[in-house]
Image 1 (spheres, rainbow, N blue to C red):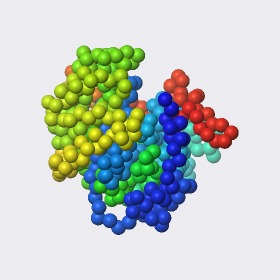
Image 2: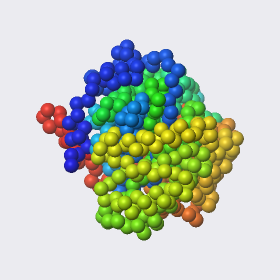
Image 3: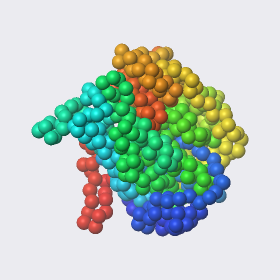
Image 4: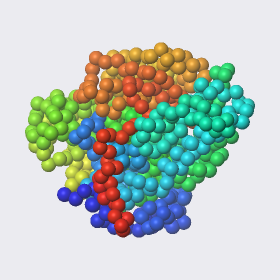
Length: 555
């Protein structure tokens, strides 16, 4: 079997102008980055508002789930059955590309191309976001060096630098060493770009004007009186927005089958809000009858944040949800070793099913959305295993569809496409979406609601620092904001080893910070960190390029 990059490299793709024309965009509406990718300069005047399909998944396992692959394959499948579809997904981060997780361009015969570009520098968006982030850091330290007119407390600087790479060496640093002119020595650190508030602001902004306003509201530090200091007080938002003026335009590419794809923005869902940009999602909805988008990691993270944060702040709402699972991953949740997953094991599948059923319960009963389960098919899956899964989901009135998009592309997603169209026609889900908590709830009540209703926790344990931060943030007027809980993606709990449907646990909150520009409060749970490290054998060691510039080993 060919590798993903071999498959992607074997397909030339259509000229990006032809892809744009499919959705009513002219050459004047796009800015070309060569023949195979472009930015959308402007959208044509249209009243079309397509259906929004959210693709999410069970908690990820080493066995793999293929959420992005199904997202792309579903969009192709919709086109194959005569529907005008567009896929809107996140840009990959270089951290996982060179680390362990891999890229985010799909797999097999359900990919977006040019795969190599998308998984590497693409159109430079992430570099621009990192530059804007670090410009603010530079202006902050420069202000302190030149007299500190805002009376910033160097011990209460909360703004960190960012780089789009897994680099544990940069988590905690001391900068400003050397001579007097080299700045003030202080503790600092880097977050990976996709965990930065700059990325969150970028993805939640509705346009360039809103982006600049949000950048200005970013809190970078506190003064000695305990008052927040914002980017606007440093006169930073204009220059930051200037760096992002081109990046904020959605990127247009295509799938292997020529379905238009908007790939734009990419915060992680375990440490940020995990969705592509509001701008790209809205653009896709105006250009299609069906927009297929995704949220990062499992539904407890990505889908919850998509609904409670992105939808709440943007007014968007999904018309249907596709919940991706694999029989292999469910057997892993049932206690089977990764090396034994290819053998039929109904008992293990039965033990692992509660993870899937909890996600179904959350989507249908907490958020009140219609759901279809997509089984990303492996050749080792047996009819008996599929039947067991179908019977279990039937108790929730949820259909199970076997999806073969990795192997067959859009042809393997036609059954799922038919199920999604039928689901959208049956209900007006957007009118019935309910959030996990109301705006009026306190911050502690919001965290408790997500912990108990979505994760299944018995309650929340707050560190002393978190309790103090709760009081401070509510006193500063941030109690009305939604919460973004940063926790492990591998479990419904904050303990990565607790597979299946974890019960009898407390969610531990270590600290709270406000992302005032993005418009949410971040609650850190467990040992989660905002700067990952590389594994013992990083993927980077297997990547190479030949004399003609052909890349190998990228997946």
